[in-house]
Image (cartoon, rainbow, N blue to C red; front, side, top):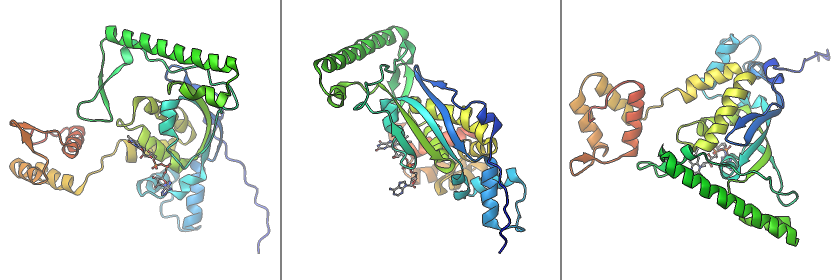
Length: 307
Ligand SMILES: Cc1cc2nc3c(=O)[nH]c(=O)nc-3n(C[C@H](O)[C@H](O)[C@H](O)COP(=O)(O)OP(=O)(O)OC[C@H]3O[C@@H](n4cnc5c(N)ncnc54)[C@H](O)[C@@H]3O)c2cc1C
């Protein structure tokens, strides 16, 4: 047995060291900042090389290896890196955030301390209209005049809720009960520690345009300001193989083959067979899967044969 001591230097990432503790602003009063981290792009390579064994470096270039691992959904090497963030988030966005069970969390306690005296405020030109096609989404903005009214009412509500909260505290009501009517716009703070594999999963879901604007703003800040500095090769690969890539279902592949062969009538017949081209009064009915395929075609700058 070889008992020789092999000194291992702790991995440091200069670009991340420079911003440790720096608050990246999100929304009107939120932020994300890095408290601590472990590992880097190099740790992923280091771990992967252990699994391949010395001398079996088929994919021997570091960048190529990381890209290969991400492309082929090898997960455990990415779990070797961890990051601890301090975040300040409105409670409604936090409620979505906290659904990601694979992180370690410690949140500010409004039983123990006074609720943070800040609520997320919406600018008059930021009120979004309900989407007609997507029940979970929004599209377009209200005109400034109506937006101003909505913002005014928002402020009244937030001030009133805060006033009642303070009144209860002044009467000596326990903080744990006094807080019950604070609005979801109230900011909370937490330490959020996650490994890189699960962070990428979080970012994939929450940077997506289907995610709500508020949590997407946090995900984008984490991706662009933090991950891009911490693990630049992984961040680049993540964008190439996850966020900017296209996944095709078997139906979409069949249709795309026909479109590429300029067999548009056959493509239409097949889409109809899939039940994608149902009409009411001669107008195509919205169909989620067809709409998703149309979005993919527009990325490829191809017009759907039925449009
Ligand atoms: C656009 C969007 C809309 C959403 N709408 C809704 C909604 O209407 N209602 C709602 O309730 N939620 C909704 N969610 C939340 C969503 O269903 C997930 O709860 C959330 O995104 C966390 O994802 P996750 O479970 O993959 O992440 P994590 O909890 O971080 O888990 C990561 C992965 O670990 C594995 N895992 C973790 N825990 C377990 C477990 N106990 N058992 C088995 N595998 C596990 C799974 O593979 C999982 O994908 C929505 C999310 C998005 C992005």
